[in-house]
Image 1 (cartoon, rainbow, N blue to C red):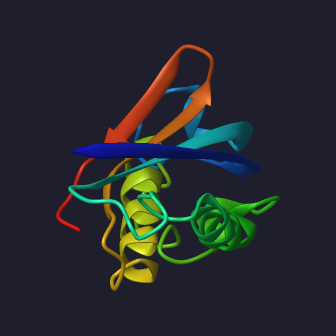
Image 2 (cartoon, rainbow, N blue to C red):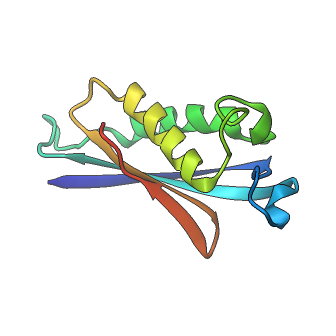
Length: 124
């Protein structure tokens, strides 16, 4: 099994609904995202997948979130823009974009600071 990771980041604001603490007030983070992909095999030139492809796809997903009020954009206008929900959203977006590739999205880790992170593992 081969595993690769691609990292990127974005900045945005959010407020957690019904959380019961200061996090219900608007605040911002510099979010750090790690996408992990796995494959049983390598392609003809010895790659799981070209890093450039993954970086491009991840960058396009994060561009939609960057410098936004997450509570105002789908799907976070309906679901809480928690770190956990961000990880799942990015996972699902990446899995959709890479649906035809031999590499599969294994997990997406989102960190909102140096001491906290959430990882979503799903079926890709």
